[in-house]
Length: 232
Length: 238
Length: 53
Image (cartoon, rainbow over all chains, first blue to last red; front, side, top):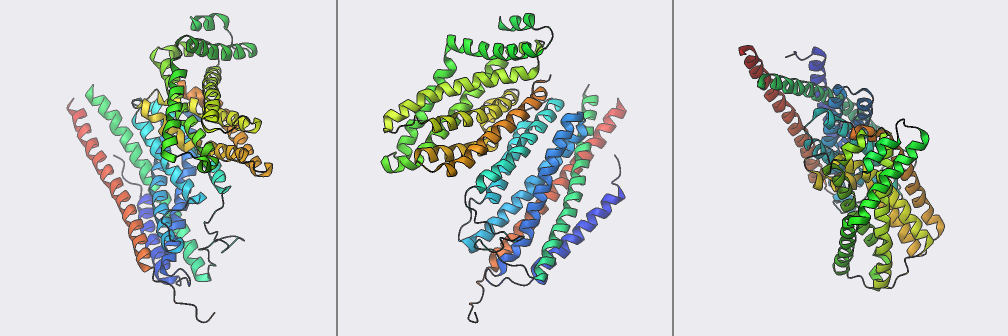
C-alpha cells in the first residue's frame, strides 16, 4: 500500500480551509440581497457546485476519449472518478437551484435549460453506472463506459441548446442580459468577492476529491487483481 | 448462409466491398424479417396499443388533439423504437450472428451501417402504418411533406444512436431493461426537436419557427452518425 | 423607492440549502473514506493470504 503523497495531504487541508472561508464569505461577508432576502446566499454554492459538476463532466468526456485512444485502464479510473464527482455535485446544484426557485419563482422546479440539462446529465450518469454494473469483463466495461460518456458528452450540449430554444426563466447574473429574467440581480463588489472565491475554492475541492477518488480506483483495481491471484 | 456469402465475396475490404457489406447486412435482416415478421408485428401492435392508451389517458378530443398530436406520435415512435432495436440486436447476439458477422473480413462500421439501415427500415415501416391509422382515427391529415421530412430526420437520429447503444445493451446482463435507460436521456434533443417541428407543421406555424428545429435535427443526425461510425469498433471488439 | 418593503424572510430556505450542501458533501467524503478503508483491509488480508500460499 502506497502512503498518501504529502501534496495530497496538504491539498486535503487546504480544501477544508477554503471551504470554511468560502462558507464564511457567502453567509456572513456578502450583503443580503434586497429583493430575495437571505435565500440568495444559496447562489454562491449553487453556481460553484454546478461548476464542479461541469468540470467533472468535461473531465469524464476527455478521459473517455483518451481511454478509447490508448486502451490504458488508468484513464478508465479517471473517467469513473470524474463521473462520480460530477454526479454528486450536480445533485447538490440541482437541489440548491430548487431551494432558490421555491421562494423566488414560487415553484420547486422549472424546466429551465440549465436545471433540466443538469438533471438529464444526472440520468445519463446513473445510466452509465447501470451499464457498467451489467458487465463482468473489465476491458469491455471500460470500453462501453467510455463510449457512453462520449455519447453523453456530445448530446448534453445539444440538449441544452434544444431546451434553450424554449424561453428561459433562469436569471443570467453575469453578462449583459443581467437581471432581465425575474430573480436576477446585480452583484455588488462584496458579492463578487464571495462568488469568485466560491468558484476558486470549489475548483480546488474538485481537484482534491478527484485525486483521492482516482487513488481509490487504483487501489480497488489492485485488490481485484490480487483477489484473482489468491483465488487461483 | 448470409455470413458465408459475406466471407466469400469480400477478401480484402475495398471501397465497393464496403457498400456491398452494408447492403448484405441490411438485406440479411430485411429478408429474415420478411419471413418471420415477428419484429414488425410486435412493433406495430405495440404502437397501436400506445395510441390506444394515450387516447384514454389524454382524452384526445378535438381541442387537445391539436396540441398533443405530435407528442403522442413521437412517444409512440420512441417506445416502439426501443422494442425494435432491442429485438433486432438481441437476435444477432442469441443466434451468434454477431460473432459470425465480426469474423467476416469486412469493415466493422459496415456492420453498423447495415444494422442502421435495417432498423431504420423497420421504424419507417411502422411509422408508415401508424400515420394513416392515426389520420383515420382522429380525422387529422398527417400526410404533409414537411411532417414526413421531420419523421425521417427524427428517425435517422434515433436509430443512429439507438443502434450503437443497443449493441452495447445486448452484451450486458440487464439487457432488456437497459436500452431505454441508456437511450432516452441522450435522444432528448431529437425528441424535443421532432415534437416541436412536427407540431409546427401540424398547426401551420411559419417556417421561421420550424427551421431551427430542422437544423437541430440535421446537426444531431450528422454528429451522431459520425460518432457512432468512429466508436462502433470498440463496442463489438472481443 | 423609499418604502421598499423589507426583504421577505427566506432564511429558512438558505439554512436548508446549506445544510443539504454540507450534508451531501459529508456523505460523499464519508463514503470515500469508508470505501478506502475497506479496500485497505481487503488488501492487507489478501496480501497475508498470498504470503501463506
